[in-house]
Length: 583
Image 1 (cartoon, one colour):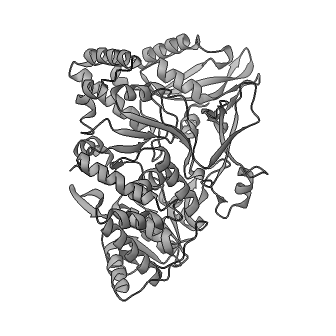
Image 2 (cartoon, one colour; image 1 turned 90 degrees about the vertical axis):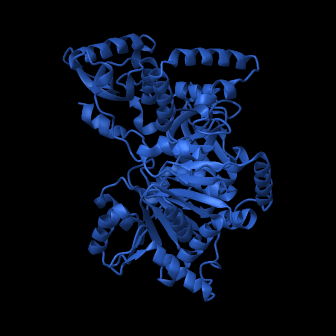
Image 3 (cartoon, rainbow, N blue to C red; image 1 turned 60 degrees about the horizontal axis):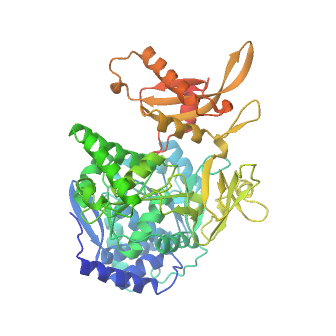
């Protein structure tokens, strides 16, 4: 199922979008769906798969369901409450978030990958009175309700249950619709202010674990306005990343709803390629591992079909012509880009972690559009944007609209901590004054915990995380991210790399050294034993070390034959890897 627009229809959409934007900057999240419905009418808004079949929802249904759920929640006594969301991406998830945050109380999106104990602890920490949950989390919710008698309800996004404290989403909608029909406007007429707290997102932050980032309507709407003013709005989008992460929610779901770009929701990681080929979306928010998956998949298909050498030659010819101002990518690589989008190469907005330069540049060489940037939950989330990532993949871009960026205490190379200020920046952490105070300077700048440098014209380059910084015995500072990218770029079979400090006894003296843990696919080396592969890895790293300054040399390597543990946005959980190999 694809949403194909004719040239005339696209022109009409562009005109409607201009009409929306003439209303000025967004004030609250309610403006997103109110303005969209008012200007675009009852157009298609969301498509998801239910039991393998596509189910579509219009803007009219979306707004109607938001109003009904919000009204029902207020009638149940939840005005001013904190309500959690737990489950996979879905239409119900979107409706529930808007309903909670736009007239009821505060939404608390939770990471579905966490264990029951942690989820319960976070719901308590955020003072949640109820939770919307997907079917696979019924046991988690009932367990928490049994342990917490004051926890009022669980709202099932899947079905109804005999337990009267577990109310089905559809029943909530019916209840709200009946109240609205009687003239109940407690939700639809609820006063909202841009400074109101809209949501609490849990993140490790810069000073410890499990801190609740408070994001207001102003924080979110500043990000949405900024995205729309800097990035061309597409006509359809693909929702892959978890909606409980600010990046997917704010940069994709909110902006797509506002500009009526149809949102196609991916139902399973195993169905990504199948769904992409079916929906053929114009754009998607991605993290580096997703981009790398696309890149590897393209070349794997080329190798399997015996066309890899031809493809490499075509890329060389194409790149040479582009230097002369001739761009033939739409024709030369249509067989690749056309699988993902009929009209043009799909657009990837890539964030969440640094991207490998060769993948970003390579995807651009094929004709895909890749945007890169830097952000964090505390900034809702965008801080800088690089709109020409394929031309310079190492750059994090320039400061986002209404966002100020500075480098604190730069060293002789201009590297220092990245600090930010703006309408998109959090007011602090929920019920954690100590963490809030520790994260802001005396003059009100948020300390990101990331290090980087800026050019005189304001372009940002990220060096690495402050908490990951390796300080050797001789006082030299090393960002492990720099070494990790160098290893991946220089030794192709080392798929994932984590650099860390450890110790080694040399001549009875215990010294700090740099080691790397690497994931290698053993299937690529069927003729080598474990010891032989280790020797090969050491030899190749020794050769790579010749490029590094003496103090940056890698002194030890540990091999894993399984992928490293990752969180729900596919970031490697560094500490788990380090704990396994450091000693």
